[in-house]
Length: 84
Image (cartoon, rainbow, N blue to C red; front, side, top):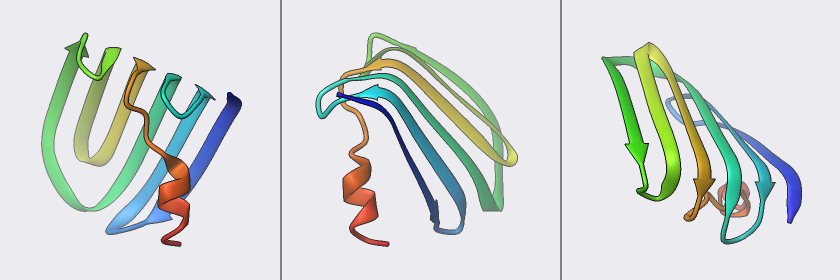
């Protein structure tokens, strides 16, 4: 288990990923922030007992922020790194 894992990529905007207390099968905290090239609709979504115990997504114009707590299907940031 890693204390944290971080990744940044550029794909039609900047995307930042941060996983805290992460393993291959579980993340305690998973954050994702994006500054997109194209504007989107304002959205606020909350999820309970889906892929994570609790999570939400907030989008406003070109900014998007996602947070998940106890995610059981975490992002594998090593997979993102292989395409850099």
